[in-house]
Image 1: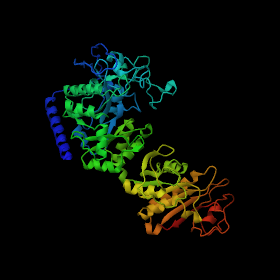
Image 2: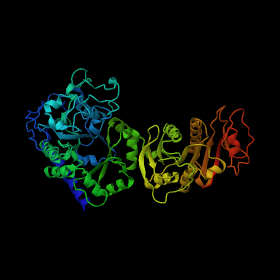
Image 3: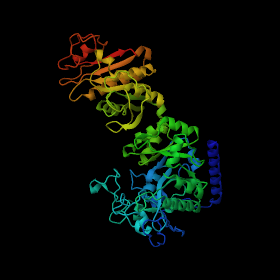
Image 4: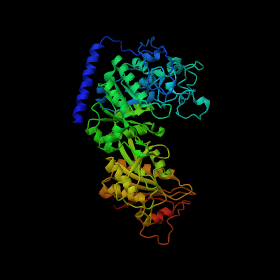
Length: 603
């Protein structure tokens, strides 16, 4: 029932767009600079503020600056058209807060110039009833001042330097002063970039943003400031919701905004005041939908979610599939600054997420443009796993090298912790998993289970279909009888049983292990495999072991059988000195004499 109602709501939005287009046919659609005078201030009410008198006077504008007139028109100017785009959409989170000063006019212009689809922002009321674009309850986080937003007038707020703490490592505040390159542009102590003015670095009104970017869809979160007791003041937030609804109607923005809030009472008040506006559900409503205990509202066209929240994985392939089945899109917002990079954005889209609220929007736009020109589905895809754990140095060295290969996608799904010696053991129940990173920061899925579980999660839970699975690089050789207990080999065998070509690769013990030599052997093997792939029933599982040489270097690659027994030899030693003996009959014999070994294993 609700899917049908949601379709009806979308049709209503489309009709509103058409009506708006007729009524505004003669409107000038160029982007102005939006420099405004602050509304006339009233007496600032003492805390706690439970109600406000909102300003109704018109906001004057000035002539556009050169930077503003360069802003391109987005591909979609309303929510219905936006949701119909057959590609990932990019929302500039707070204008791109990891790249530019948080939610400033400068940031929004830069994001528009970068080619984003949507401008995202948070709103709340000032003490004199002006709806401003501001994330936190206080001004402390972004400006060089302190104080609650609700205790200040707009005149007081707009004088502050919103870019005071802005840096390319936002929100860090422990960097050298030279890192805060925008500091002082608001106050005139530092000259702003060409085409911009000090006003582009102030706390801005929502109305001014909306008027400055009339063609851009806006994604708006209604914040819930705290009261004097430190608890969320929902009544005050509802006043903000009603003011937002009034200004949306006043600016004829009904069809081109989507609104959300964490609080369901705030959302209920907003929907009542603005029944034609697209929304995302509040926290309790979202929980009800996820747990199948409640339906969403027909206007809830998008779920705006983090990958995880308070230690729980939220965005999963199953959730994405269910949302899409119900005609709902999913937009992802990062819950950690480490997720603000193009590789993580790409991972989310590969999972099926429809849009990214990007703190680095230019990176997202560029990545998706490259992927549109060279679709990942056309590339060679390598799934990488291991048994040493997702943060181990061996898998990190391998992934960083594989990423450099042309026309290659790399996916990392590996155990969250070291699982050496677990062979192809599987968990008795489906294992949990979480978003993670390799040591160099490449996005990964960390599985709370065994290496074989990691392969199962990649293939079955995520539904990925790699061209090749590589397990490694393990720290410590897996030759002779060690192959039967190796989790590295067990992961490769699990992939082969599922029908995927697989390579297990291990680096000889050393202090430190020479992963660079192992990486080179893998790259050579992958090149050969891509040029001449062999059927799985012929190739079996490839098991590659590379010694760590304390003297000399690896002599070359020996294609050998797996040793049946050590026969008095120590498989944990290798000697790369001298010319290298060719008197060997199996992997132990070759390895201990300084040769990399390649053996074929059954699966």
